[in-house]
Image (spheres, rainbow, N blue to C red):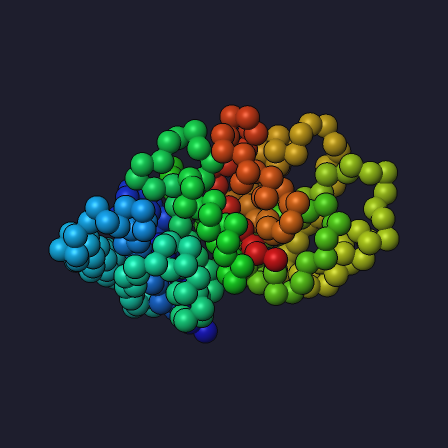
Length: 276
Protein backbone atom coordinates (compact mmCIF):
# COMPACT_ATOMS: atom_id res chain seq x y z
CA UNK A 1 0.00 0.00 0.00
CA UNK A 2 1.41 3.35 -1.04
CA UNK A 3 1.32 6.07 1.62
CA UNK A 4 0.54 9.67 0.70
CA UNK A 5 2.33 12.25 2.85
CA UNK A 6 1.74 16.00 2.61
CA UNK A 7 4.64 18.30 3.52
CA UNK A 8 3.69 22.00 3.73
CA UNK A 9 6.78 24.18 3.34
CA UNK A 10 7.72 27.85 3.55
CA UNK A 11 11.31 26.96 2.55
CA UNK A 12 12.56 27.62 6.10
CA UNK A 13 15.14 25.47 7.92
CA UNK A 14 12.36 24.30 10.19
CA UNK A 15 10.25 23.09 7.25
CA UNK A 16 13.31 21.32 5.82
CA UNK A 17 13.90 19.58 9.15
CA UNK A 18 10.32 18.24 9.07
CA UNK A 19 10.84 17.00 5.50
CA UNK A 20 14.05 15.18 6.47
CA UNK A 21 12.27 13.60 9.44
CA UNK A 22 9.40 12.40 7.22
CA UNK A 23 11.74 10.90 4.63
CA UNK A 24 13.59 8.96 7.32
CA UNK A 25 10.40 7.94 9.12
CA UNK A 26 8.99 6.38 5.95
CA UNK A 27 12.34 5.10 4.68
CA UNK A 28 11.08 1.56 4.17
CA UNK A 29 7.60 2.48 2.91
CA UNK A 30 6.33 3.11 -0.59
CA UNK A 31 5.29 6.77 -0.44
CA UNK A 32 4.36 9.74 -2.53
CA UNK A 33 5.45 12.96 -0.82
CA UNK A 34 3.68 16.17 -1.78
CA UNK A 35 5.54 19.44 -1.20
CA UNK A 36 2.99 22.23 -0.78
CA UNK A 37 3.60 25.97 -0.73
CA UNK A 38 0.97 28.69 -0.37
CA UNK A 39 1.48 32.08 -2.03
CA UNK A 40 -1.67 33.47 -0.43
CA UNK A 41 -1.76 37.27 -0.04
CA UNK A 42 -4.25 38.89 2.31
CA UNK A 43 -7.02 40.82 0.52
CA UNK A 44 -6.19 43.85 2.68
CA UNK A 45 -2.67 43.97 1.26
CA UNK A 46 -3.54 42.80 -2.24
CA UNK A 47 -3.96 46.34 -3.52
CA UNK A 48 -0.32 47.05 -2.63
CA UNK A 49 0.85 44.43 -5.12
CA UNK A 50 0.74 44.75 -8.87
CA UNK A 51 -0.04 41.72 -11.03
CA UNK A 52 3.61 41.70 -12.01
CA UNK A 53 4.73 41.37 -8.36
CA UNK A 54 2.14 38.67 -7.63
CA UNK A 55 3.28 36.74 -10.68
CA UNK A 56 6.88 37.11 -9.52
CA UNK A 57 5.94 35.74 -6.07
CA UNK A 58 4.35 32.69 -7.70
CA UNK A 59 7.29 32.15 -10.03
CA UNK A 60 9.72 32.30 -7.11
CA UNK A 61 7.58 29.84 -5.13
CA UNK A 62 7.34 27.45 -8.06
CA UNK A 63 11.10 27.66 -8.55
CA UNK A 64 11.60 26.99 -4.85
CA UNK A 65 9.34 23.91 -4.99
CA UNK A 66 11.11 22.55 -8.06
CA UNK A 67 14.52 23.08 -6.47
CA UNK A 68 13.28 21.40 -3.28
CA UNK A 69 11.97 18.44 -5.25
CA UNK A 70 15.31 18.13 -7.07
CA UNK A 71 17.30 18.41 -3.84
CA UNK A 72 15.22 15.71 -2.13
CA UNK A 73 15.43 13.38 -5.14
CA UNK A 74 19.22 13.76 -5.00
CA UNK A 75 19.69 13.39 -1.25
CA UNK A 76 16.97 10.80 -0.62
CA UNK A 77 17.71 8.48 -3.57
CA UNK A 78 15.09 6.02 -2.30
CA UNK A 79 13.36 3.92 -4.94
CA UNK A 80 10.35 3.59 -2.60
CA UNK A 81 9.72 7.33 -2.75
CA UNK A 82 8.38 9.65 -5.40
CA UNK A 83 7.59 13.35 -5.18
CA UNK A 84 5.07 15.88 -6.41
CA UNK A 85 4.72 19.63 -5.91
CA UNK A 86 1.61 21.69 -5.18
CA UNK A 87 1.58 25.47 -5.56
CA UNK A 88 -1.56 27.12 -4.18
CA UNK A 89 -2.97 30.65 -4.09
CA UNK A 90 -5.25 29.64 -1.22
CA UNK A 91 -4.36 30.36 2.39
CA UNK A 92 -2.38 27.56 4.01
CA UNK A 93 -5.34 25.96 5.80
CA UNK A 94 -7.54 25.84 2.69
CA UNK A 95 -4.61 24.69 0.56
CA UNK A 96 -3.88 21.80 2.93
CA UNK A 97 -7.58 20.84 3.19
CA UNK A 98 -7.90 20.79 -0.61
CA UNK A 99 -4.74 18.71 -1.05
CA UNK A 100 -5.79 16.25 1.68
CA UNK A 101 -9.15 15.72 -0.03
CA UNK A 102 -8.01 15.62 -3.65
CA UNK A 103 -4.89 13.49 -3.11
CA UNK A 104 -6.37 11.32 -0.32
CA UNK A 105 -3.49 12.18 2.02
CA UNK A 106 -2.74 9.78 4.89
CA UNK A 107 -0.67 12.15 7.03
CA UNK A 108 0.42 15.80 7.12
CA UNK A 109 3.94 16.40 8.46
CA UNK A 110 5.06 19.92 9.29
CA UNK A 111 7.47 21.86 11.49
CA UNK A 112 6.52 23.72 14.63
CA UNK A 113 6.88 27.17 13.16
CA UNK A 114 8.01 29.10 10.11
CA UNK A 115 11.01 31.28 9.41
CA UNK A 116 9.85 34.23 11.53
CA UNK A 117 8.46 32.38 14.54
CA UNK A 118 9.47 33.54 18.01
CA UNK A 119 11.01 30.82 20.15
CA UNK A 120 8.59 31.24 23.04
CA UNK A 121 5.45 30.81 20.95
CA UNK A 122 3.82 27.40 21.17
CA UNK A 123 4.03 25.63 17.78
CA UNK A 124 3.66 28.81 15.72
CA UNK A 125 0.46 30.31 14.35
CA UNK A 126 0.36 28.28 11.11
CA UNK A 127 0.61 24.99 12.99
CA UNK A 128 -1.98 26.03 15.58
CA UNK A 129 -4.46 27.11 12.89
CA UNK A 130 -3.92 23.86 11.02
CA UNK A 131 -4.44 21.75 14.15
CA UNK A 132 -7.65 23.64 14.94
CA UNK A 133 -9.12 23.48 11.45
CA UNK A 134 -7.98 20.27 9.76
CA UNK A 135 -10.50 17.51 10.53
CA UNK A 136 -9.84 15.07 7.70
CA UNK A 137 -6.32 13.89 8.47
CA UNK A 138 -3.81 13.52 11.34
CA UNK A 139 -0.94 15.99 11.60
CA UNK A 140 2.55 15.04 12.79
CA UNK A 141 4.27 18.12 14.22
CA UNK A 142 8.07 18.08 14.24
CA UNK A 143 9.88 20.38 16.74
CA UNK A 144 12.57 22.49 15.11
CA UNK A 145 15.51 20.84 16.92
CA UNK A 146 14.17 17.29 16.63
CA UNK A 147 16.41 14.72 14.95
CA UNK A 148 15.05 11.44 13.68
CA UNK A 149 15.24 8.36 15.86
CA UNK A 150 13.25 5.22 15.19
CA UNK A 151 9.91 5.65 16.99
CA UNK A 152 9.80 2.56 19.18
CA UNK A 153 7.63 4.01 21.96
CA UNK A 154 4.41 5.91 21.21
CA UNK A 155 2.76 7.69 24.14
CA UNK A 156 -1.02 8.12 24.19
CA UNK A 157 -2.46 10.01 27.20
CA UNK A 158 -6.19 9.55 27.84
CA UNK A 159 -8.68 10.03 30.65
CA UNK A 160 -11.00 7.33 29.18
CA UNK A 161 -13.91 9.77 29.32
CA UNK A 162 -14.18 9.74 25.57
CA UNK A 163 -14.79 6.88 23.15
CA UNK A 164 -12.12 6.57 20.45
CA UNK A 165 -13.27 5.13 17.14
CA UNK A 166 -11.11 2.78 15.10
CA UNK A 167 -10.86 5.53 12.47
CA UNK A 168 -9.35 7.95 15.02
CA UNK A 169 -6.75 5.36 16.00
CA UNK A 170 -5.57 4.87 12.39
CA UNK A 171 -2.85 7.53 12.77
CA UNK A 172 -1.35 5.80 15.81
CA UNK A 173 -1.54 2.42 14.08
CA UNK A 174 0.14 3.84 10.99
CA UNK A 175 3.12 5.02 13.03
CA UNK A 176 3.24 1.89 15.19
CA UNK A 177 3.35 -0.32 12.10
CA UNK A 178 6.47 1.41 10.73
CA UNK A 179 8.89 0.10 13.35
CA UNK A 180 6.72 -2.28 15.39
CA UNK A 181 6.45 0.36 18.10
CA UNK A 182 5.05 -0.20 21.56
CA UNK A 183 1.97 1.93 22.32
CA UNK A 184 1.96 3.18 25.89
CA UNK A 185 -1.47 4.38 27.02
CA UNK A 186 -1.15 6.81 29.93
CA UNK A 187 -3.93 7.55 32.41
CA UNK A 188 -3.69 9.91 35.38
CA UNK A 189 -5.74 8.61 38.31
CA UNK A 190 -7.89 11.59 39.18
CA UNK A 191 -10.60 9.30 40.56
CA UNK A 192 -10.67 6.33 42.95
CA UNK A 193 -12.03 4.04 40.26
CA UNK A 194 -13.20 4.30 36.68
CA UNK A 195 -16.83 5.02 35.88
CA UNK A 196 -18.86 2.60 33.76
CA UNK A 197 -18.31 4.87 30.75
CA UNK A 198 -14.55 4.93 31.33
CA UNK A 199 -14.47 1.15 31.72
CA UNK A 200 -16.36 0.75 28.45
CA UNK A 201 -14.01 3.12 26.60
CA UNK A 202 -10.98 1.29 28.02
CA UNK A 203 -12.39 -2.04 26.85
CA UNK A 204 -13.01 -0.72 23.33
CA UNK A 205 -9.52 0.80 23.19
CA UNK A 206 -8.00 -2.57 24.10
CA UNK A 207 -10.16 -4.22 21.43
CA UNK A 208 -9.12 -1.84 18.65
CA UNK A 209 -5.44 -2.14 19.59
CA UNK A 210 -5.46 -5.88 20.33
CA UNK A 211 -3.03 -6.70 17.50
CA UNK A 212 -0.47 -4.15 18.73
CA UNK A 213 2.03 -4.27 21.57
CA UNK A 214 0.41 -2.07 24.23
CA UNK A 215 1.02 -1.20 27.84
CA UNK A 216 -1.47 0.61 30.05
CA UNK A 217 0.02 2.96 32.62
CA UNK A 218 -1.87 4.26 35.67
CA UNK A 219 -0.18 7.31 37.12
CA UNK A 220 -1.05 8.93 40.45
CA UNK A 221 -2.19 12.54 40.35
CA UNK A 222 0.88 14.30 41.76
CA UNK A 223 1.20 17.45 39.62
CA UNK A 224 -0.42 19.32 36.73
CA UNK A 225 -1.12 17.35 33.57
CA UNK A 226 1.66 18.89 31.50
CA UNK A 227 4.30 18.02 34.11
CA UNK A 228 3.06 14.45 34.36
CA UNK A 229 3.06 14.03 30.57
CA UNK A 230 6.60 15.42 30.35
CA UNK A 231 7.73 13.07 33.13
CA UNK A 232 6.06 10.15 31.34
CA UNK A 233 7.88 11.03 28.09
CA UNK A 234 11.25 11.02 29.89
CA UNK A 235 10.66 7.91 32.00
CA UNK A 236 9.57 5.69 29.11
CA UNK A 237 11.72 7.28 26.40
CA UNK A 238 8.64 8.14 24.35
CA UNK A 239 9.49 8.76 20.67
CA UNK A 240 6.17 10.24 19.55
CA UNK A 241 3.32 11.66 21.63
CA UNK A 242 -0.17 11.16 20.21
CA UNK A 243 -3.44 12.80 21.23
CA UNK A 244 -6.95 13.15 19.81
CA UNK A 245 -8.09 16.74 19.34
CA UNK A 246 -11.71 17.21 20.40
CA UNK A 247 -13.81 19.82 22.21
CA UNK A 248 -12.40 20.62 25.68
CA UNK A 249 -9.44 18.31 25.12
CA UNK A 250 -5.90 18.94 26.36
CA UNK A 251 -4.84 19.95 22.85
CA UNK A 252 -7.63 22.51 22.59
CA UNK A 253 -6.46 24.03 25.89
CA UNK A 254 -2.80 24.31 24.95
CA UNK A 255 -3.51 25.76 21.50
CA UNK A 256 -5.35 28.62 23.22
CA UNK A 257 -2.23 29.35 25.28
CA UNK A 258 0.46 31.08 23.19
CA UNK A 259 3.38 30.93 25.58
CA UNK A 260 5.00 27.65 26.54
CA UNK A 261 6.46 29.04 29.77
CA UNK A 262 3.04 29.60 31.32
CA UNK A 263 1.98 26.04 30.54
CA UNK A 264 5.21 24.11 30.91
CA UNK A 265 4.53 22.07 27.77
CA UNK A 266 8.11 21.86 26.46
CA UNK A 267 7.62 19.01 24.05
CA UNK A 268 10.77 18.13 22.12
CA UNK A 269 9.53 15.02 20.35
CA UNK A 270 7.14 14.70 17.40
CA UNK A 271 3.52 15.29 18.35
CA UNK A 272 0.76 13.44 16.48
CA UNK A 273 -2.54 15.36 16.53
CA UNK A 274 -5.51 13.22 15.55
CA UNK A 275 -8.77 14.96 14.56
CA UNK A 276 -11.98 13.59 16.01
